[in-house]
Length: 248
Image (cartoon, rainbow, N blue to C red; front, side, top):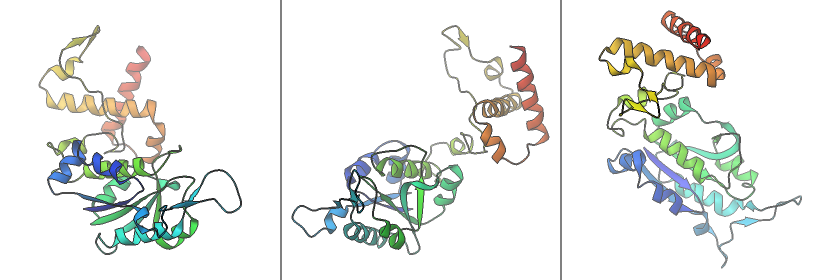
């Protein structure tokens, strides 16, 4: 997959590509990430990329000429038909399903804004979709761009040392993850659940599913509303979880 990030701070993107799962995906040739700086498309001595907003108000707005030129240059380096996505608080919410869909695309241009935002005419002429990573305000789109890249990279075949990791983590089945434990058996007066210390894989599977269902029910009930009706086993395990909680 070929990703191009349009950003005023290309080093933020480049340095992040050296670490973790994303860095591994790049080194293994599964992912290629480039950058395009709008400042290289300016014509004045100060390399101006922002100006005061029409109508007044605080802050500055990214100018349309250098930004649209940068987006066009970035798009030339990705496969034809690749989407141009602006990281924006006004966009649709980024989630695991979106990451799964984006993984299968050959390329994408991610546009990281700064200041109060970008000129609306750039959105009208050079953006295919706006995407939000959450209902909060950040200083720029670089961190959201890295979030999108990381979420997609870990889904690529060969990016993770164990392919089961991406299939068994939070949101993969519309549920939060189950609790995880490692050695020692006892820590701070708390003990690893007995079921995980044995070798009964079916018991472990059912325990993990039950805990994932219960944790999602308690912490993210909105996810239950988005899921299809549970299987008979899921209903049984959730009822078992809730009954145990009532006894505590």
